[in-house]
Image (cartoon, one colour):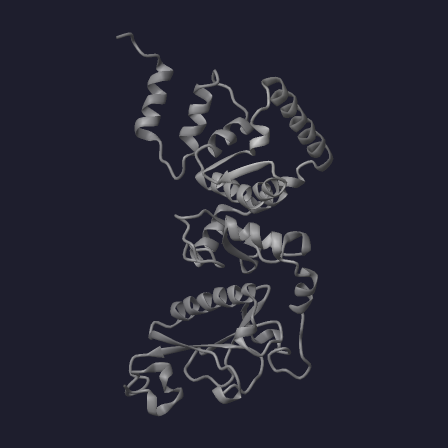
Length: 332
C-alpha cells in the first residue's frame, strides 16, 4: 500500500473524526470539490446540496401535478397519472429528428420567457429563504413546536419555511411577531390564493378608539412592547405583579386577533412570565385569563390577557383555578 499524502491524512482525519455536523453542508461541500478537481462555485455546491433535499423535489412534484399536468391533459397532449405521465397516443409515433426539433422549440420558449421575466418565476422561492438569521428562524420554529401553523404537519414530514405574515414589500418587518412557520406547500398556497390587500391590514394595526383606556395608555406604564402588543401592570391587581398583555390595535375579542397579533402577545406573555420569576422567587404558578364578552365578565372592551402570579398559600384551596369564574364549579 502506498504512503498517503499529508493532505489526504489531514482531510481523512477531519472527515472521520473532527467534523461536527449540524447539517449535510460540509461533507457535500468537500465532496463537490473532490469531484471537480478541487474547485467549484457556490452555485455548483448549492446544486449538489439541493440534490440531497427531498423537500424540494416534493415541492415541484406538487407543482407538476397541480399546474402543467392539468393543462397538458386538458389540451390532449399527455395522459397517465403522477406515477407515469406519457404523451397521448397521437404523439407516440414521433421520429427522433422530430423529437429533437420539438425539444429545440422548448429550449427556445424557455430562453424567451426567462429573458423577459428574469428571476420572477422563482421569486417566491427566493423570498422564502429571506435574510433572517438562523437564531430568528430557530425561535420561530421553536414557537410553532416544529409544526406548520396552518395545516399542522410536523417538520420531519414536510420542510417548514419562515414566512412573513405581512410581506416585506408591503411594509412587514423582520420582527419575530411578524413571522410564522409554514410548510412549503401552505407557504406556496398562501401566496397563490391570498388576495388580501395587506396595506389595509397594516392600516388596521393603527386602529385606536378615542376614550378606550387601553388605546390611550400612558407610555410610562408600559413595561414591555413589540410592534403589535404591549405589557402593563394591572391597575387593580389580583396578586402582586399581575400583568396585562394588550394588543395595540383596538379589537374587543381575542378571537378577532390576527395570527401575527397572537404571536406578538404570546411572545410578550412568555417574556412577562420570565421577568416576574426573575424578580420574585415566591411565585410558584400562574393563572392566565381572557374575558370575552360582557357575560364572561369583560368590562374593558379592548382585548387583554391577564397573567396572574400565584404563590403557595395565597388562597386556602387553589384547586380548580380558572374554574372559579363560576364559584360553584371550582371544586370537583
